[in-house]
Image 1 (spheres, rainbow, N blue to C red):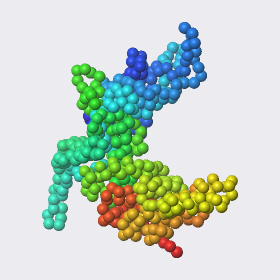
Image 2 (cartoon, one colour):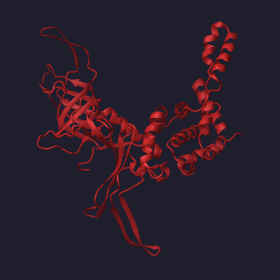
Image 3 (cartoon, rainbow, N blue to C red):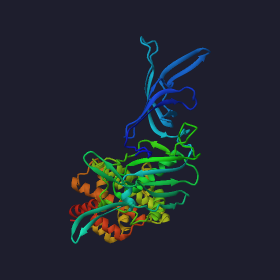
Image 4 (tube, rainbow, N blue to C red):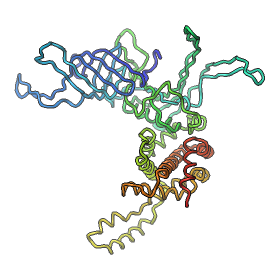
Length: 492
């Protein structure tokens, strides 16, 4: 897309000059390459000094064994744009000192992130006034489109006419508790014709992006936090990993990345880095049946503030849920520990459930019990006696927080599920195997536990009970989990 943001799934290359910020006059020619999969590499004709040296006396330099680990920042100029490289680590350096043939030194450097269009000082430099981003399936989650289409009919038969039209969509915005403004907007093109030798193609494009504007300028580190916040929200809504398509920033000083003093580029600062998942712009969108909620069922102006609050309050559990979404699902043992662990962490972060005994009574009982134990074992017994809920208590209480009709659709007996989940987790964690569970039952335990955790998060976001029932009944994954639970988790 001409003039559009740099997509993370597309490769790019910049040939220019590169230097360390503290040595701006020592410029080295080279090429920065981005491979379209989150990987950046800088190839220099020449080198930055990566050798470890000392100067024990005037005119004497000693080169020690080993090389420098990294440079925090490298600046560059290429394609008439300023470029900042962050997290630069030398991969290899080849020097031709005393070589038979006079040829240039070369150096290969791997890079964590690149800002194309600005010179920044580091990750924490509060140099940006706004950020805009897009992730996979944001169009589906937004629940609106600038495009409309229709087919003409003559009675009950198509008459061969039809149309595709485009019309503006009103931007949605909301301010959250920390003063940050989130804006959901559409980017669309006017209709145009693509004339080919064998056919003519009419095209209209519509995409959705999120613009984030903080109260005061923010750093790249803060930008990445906002990107993950949006990415995880869409991943939760679509019930699948959502890759980042592109990220574009606006400098706080209003000057955007052209090296020419005569004119300033207005295309913004593009960020290239390795997110948890790189978005595939042209892949088929998520099936509408797989979307848990959109801005139709949870309006944008309501879901963003709720998500910011819920994510901050339940962050460890949310991260574990996203770990299951973005991580490998090949091994059921990993999934079991992750799902039950996420459930336990979620219960603790929710702060629900009381201790089994009043604190004063528990201390008295524990003291009396410890007095009966041999003195050399008292410390061990003391650590074993805890006034805390059991894992089974926590799982059952998570199920109990949900609508009984929703839970009934998912699993025939929540108490039986909790017991089997605890047994599987404890056997695996403490014995190294799960001999009391078949592979099919383990998979079902993992799936039901994951859905219970998911429904609790959706409940915190305010998803109506009616919608929760619908997704358990009709979402392909959740419906499948419920069918398997009826087969494998019914009490005997």
